Image (cartoon, rainbow, N blue to C red):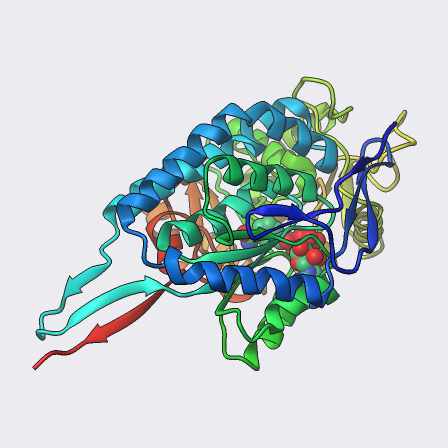
Length: 476
Ligand code: NAD
């Protein structure tokens, strides 16, 4: 297989050679083969990109809302044209099965664009306050954007689009594991006519390239998505220059099943929801909390459902799940499965090792533990693989206590036939999104977490506001 040479960075409107090349191989997680070579950016490459973004900010921050709406509409048109290419790249670099890549991974690039276009229409950049003063909302400046690999275009779109919509300029450092979709995104922005210097892309790792961006004195804001560990590092690096920081981090979301729910549907969507994207979603329902009277019935349905989950080659169409992204993730998941067994949880489905017939590729056995107690590692740590923990509870108070007993607070799921109960719980759950009976939040709704799941919200109007400074003007 030929290794694609993708070592250039997109800076100041053109693909340029790295100042200090450092080769890094991008793997296909299904075959473990190197598919492309990128370069890891140096501090000097980041300096160059930030300087281009700073120059462009002077004029781009003065464009009108109408100009920027037109720009987003052009991006949408080009994105739709190159949609299939995007789905194929995500399939290749992440291992997302092609059907899912087309239906979800690439689709979010369209959905978020439409969500932001609507929000931009609603956004008030100037407001008269009741006290007679004027409030102006202005672009925050040059933004450093760091994204992970699990929903690669989702996270790029959730950062680049609101930045552009509000008149900011950006330097994006995508995950070094999934840089190819981000590079295609750069091509799409170029073709749509994004002015030079407004969007820049430097590939690279966290400790050098990412940290150079977070520490940079000429960057005004950092928007980060990834692990809580790296989010804390970005925040500390940004502190010396008092940058605004927004963070979308991990989760360990509860899925609370009451006896009055549609149990069959609730268990199936809970299991498949946890396994979707090979378990690599920050808002995955990874802790299934089950009311005791239905516990045995739930285990029966969960076992059949879990065993029905197919694993397969991402290049093939179908409803199977693919491998996880890297050997590092594979090993981390194996460690946690072993920890679950050692700590006394009961293995209901799957377990350690690879599924039969998948010696090559980072494939994981879809796994379900029951009789889990909320102090076990598999209930506390984000596994980021297709591993579900089932925990019994006695009553609503205990369910709520277990649900909130986590350092995270990204999402929570409720399954009940009692709408008053659902509303009571919604108010008490410490999470940024609550999904009731299998519903999903639409594009334009804010996405983000309480507690160690992050700071700020992405998507729609709230996502735009994170990229705006507020100015109060008082006149005689
Ligand atoms: P990661 O934190 O290792 O990497 C994420 C990004 O941060 C990558 O681009 C990486 O190069 C960079 N990075 C790593 N260390 C850095 C540092 N010290 N300074 C600056 N940048 C650094 O996480 P990952 O393994 O790529 O992604 C998985 C994690 O992301 C999971 O914990 C998941 O829950 C979280 N996540 C959260 C959301 C959300 O919206 N809340 C969305 C997707 C993923």
